[in-house]
Image (cartoon, rainbow, N blue to C red; front, top):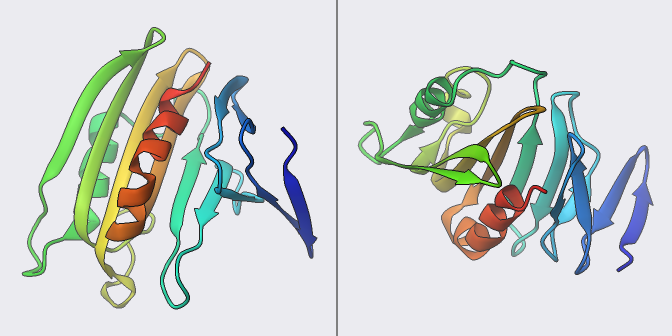
Length: 174
């Protein structure tokens, strides 16, 4: 199926239609309907998508990272970093949900964190940029061509609506 393409300045925005695919390291996966694609904001990002919510709310975002063959750190190191970017209302650490599976002979690690999210490089962004009531669903896909890092995040209500789409997008690599 065709996708609607809108050009705004130097970036291209694509609204995914049923049947749209993304190619990541030569693998293809189906892009969920309604996800809006934009030009990746850095060379470490292979793809970026958003689903805009109600006016005045933050969007659901999905980003796919690739840092190069053998790069990006172990799943465990990334899980520790992502968990450190979250806190509970009292300022303490949050619980994590982690699962491991094999999809088409590739190891996948999936983690989820909920709470106040200080997203950013390293140990997170500054406290004043922290966003309460957020969820991060992260999938580390260890492919023969390199490790892909999928992150789906945003306000809890938005991520809950996109949970299945996020997991299908990551696990759909063929």
